[in-house]
Amino acid sequence: MKKMFIIFTIAIFVIVIHLRFGSNIHDIYKENWNISIPNPTKYISPIEHVGAGDILVFDIMHYEDEDIRYLISKKEFSRIDFELERFYNNEVRKNFFYYLNGEELKKFNFYFDKEKIFNEDNFYVILEKNTESRYNFNLLIVDVGDNILYSIHSNYGDRT
Figure 1 (cartoon, helix red, strand yellow):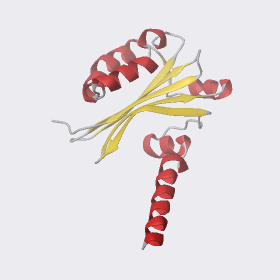
Figure 2: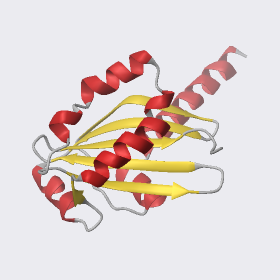
Figure 3: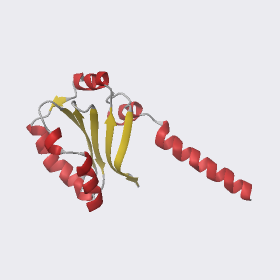
């Protein structure tokens, strides 16, 4: 019985590791958003809620210079403009910040300096999926100076 428990525990550990690290960023974005982005050299998720169909994630992906140049050359990406400001103040506040607790909001603000990142040297793309019952977005912002791609993703809650 003890041997069976150990085997079961190891199997669960392997499955969790595979699910967390087995997929690569390129494949995830291609499959879920039909956009091709390179795999980052470093990747962290300071905020991550996944469960029961709801997703609320803030990812920070570090890249080499050539990968940043590749990203900003894609037709989907635009220079930061008024449209991003409008989207951030409306949809991100309503569908992302609303669900964060105080500690998570502090963590977000620690990693994401809007005043620094929202400038005309940087780029963004808004990826959206909208159904009758659910609104889903992924906001990607490229910080050209620091070679970072920020991802703010919300598929949280049902539309009323």
